[in-house]
Length: 376
Image (cartoon, rainbow, N blue to C red; front, side, top):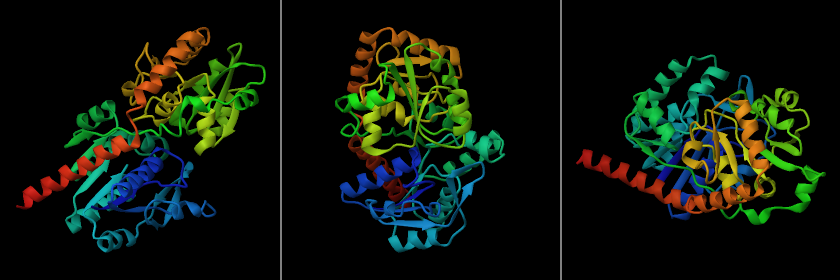
């Protein structure tokens, strides 16, 4: 199967869209398919080795930084996209979080008569409101128009699926995200990492993710004041300055990736996520794979991942006091933390990228079959 993955982000970018697009390409190659990636060009000076190490060819289109969030690149109009679809003789177009480049990919696919699968992955309404000066209702009209043109839209969680259906998007199916259970695991817990992060033996509470307004990391301010607790923040982004100011005493590690990130995850005692707008929340799943109990908002993707009283605690969204109290309660109960961690690891062991990759190919096959039936 010849598939063109049109993605709004790709490594060296570090975010959920980029990671999922990379894993999708790898899964297709592993199954003998022939993918091609089309993505915005990274910033000048970015790691040029990323494309060379990708599992398939990557075509870059010119891009500019998103105003207010320069780590995100927005693709400029380019003839490369249509030319690449034709040259690759694409049988299917996979649109990863389509909003700018993906819109052009959808239009090109329609002109060429190629079926398209659109993957909803980002709270684009929230992004448009926060960074682009666009009202959320306007953003949803755009989202609906793009996804309505797709043969199938894939939602990463039950909450995202409900949002899409509520806003009139047709032909929506569930496709969750995988987790690398070999890379992330409790065996990576590292005493040296723990001594570095908490030299006085404090309980280590971690946040991993972008530092951006929609993540609301400042809600962890109350955790910083808890006696015997050390807050560790991993990530970067436009809110780094305000997060540092709001979280005095927190260990700010900046961006960490790969095996180093896996060791940090496994060395935590508790993982806390604060963003209420997650369509999936991959870092929650990575924490669970690492055997770490989770505190997360009872909203969006975490509703599918965290089982209260079994793998972690769900708290009311945007409630700093509830976050602090949940952390304090778990800090006082090491036996419960250990039980949650074991149950979390068990819960994600079947959610590998191999498993969800097989599901994705099934979606492709169904879409191609439906197109063939209509043509007949």
